[in-house]
Structures are given as structure tokens and as C-alpha cells.
Length: 262
Image (cartoon, rainbow, N blue to C red):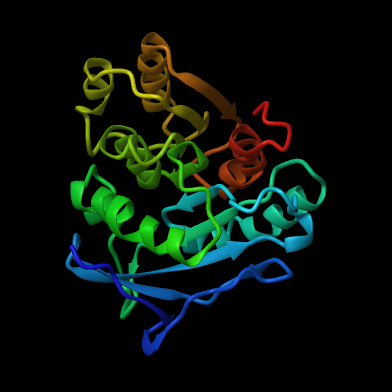
């Protein structure tokens, strides 16, 4: 398979310039980059957060990577880049790279592809494993071991993270799910119960008012019975950012604690 193209892109199109980023001195959030996927047959866009180089241990040149579906929402509503700045500066988490993958068509932002991508789409898992991750690993100083990678998503994106625990477990060790909406793939509970236990660390959260608590609790039961390492959180909120945003520090500390204790 030929390597995907990495080009600088605006919100509505791509420029013809190939970009390879150097590590900046200050924390940065890039503009959109466009990647043409052979696995999916269309282009996607994403943005990349890189930490302030002054926060990095001089001996730790390779950084772990957090990947997010619905990445534009984690920027606009979750304000995750600012949270990363604060938690890294305070030493609460180790420096990391974050990749915010946009679920929309970069040439038509009204075209939301979530329902095509997030329901255990094997080609979407291939896009991450065979195209996006190699591109990021080539352009940035990443730790390329699966134990240094986490996939995070909310609602249907949380379902996608659960799917990646089965479809992309050789690529991701960290599986993070906020209010996963499991009903489009009802067989996923049995799939986890019947599959061999993979080497995964899992974060699972749900609200208790107007969210998906029954689905999350059912998944929790399966994961506990299989013996997975699991952090489970509930909050008195609904299916919204009043639920998800306050839990982002919990997600980060579980996977990227500066002490390594999680």
C-alpha cells in the first residue's frame, strides 16, 4: 500500500505543499492537515497538538500519543489543548502529542461521517493503523509502541473506541470511552465476552441522567468479568459537555500520569 499524502489544508480544501513538522519550542495546535485515505477511499483532516519543549525531560525524546475521534469537538467544546497545557505545566501528566481527527468531509463540513466511520468499521480501523499513525510517527517524535497510544471518543465515538479494542488492539493499548452509545452494534458485548482478553487499559465513563448508563454498566460488567484493567466513572450529568469536559483530566491522568501510576 502506498503511503498517504500529508498536506497542509484549510477548512474547505488542500494546498499542494507537503509539510513535515519540526518540534516547536512552545506548545502549539496546528492548522488542519489533510490525508487521503486508500482504506476509506476519501480524504480526512486532523490537527496536532505538540507540547512546550521546555516541559520535556531531555532524556525522553519520544512522546506518547492521544488520538481522538470527533477531534474538532474536543477542541471547540472540550478545550482540550488548554487543559493539556495546564496539566503538563503542573507536572500532573507527562508531555504528550494529541491528534484531533475530524469526522467531517474536509471539502464539505456539513457532511458528518460519524455513522459511516464509528460503527466497528474495519476500514476506519485500517485507516488509523496503516495510514494515519505511520504518518504521525514519521512527522513527529513519537513513541511508536502500542503501549504509548490511546484512542478517545464520546457517544458514537466511544463506541468506536470499544470497536478499536477488538479491531485495532495491536495498535492501541489505551481505550477511552465517554458515554459510549453501543446500540448500533449490539453484538459488541458478546464480542468482548467471547474474544481472547487483549492487553488493554480501559477508561469508561457515563452520566446518570439522560445518558447511556445501562449500556455502560453492561459493558463494564463484561470487561470486569474478563479481567481488564478498567477505570469506571459516573457523573450526575447527561449526554453533554457538562459530563464529558470535567472528566478529561481523569482520562489524561489515567493514561499519562507523570508518576506512571495512572
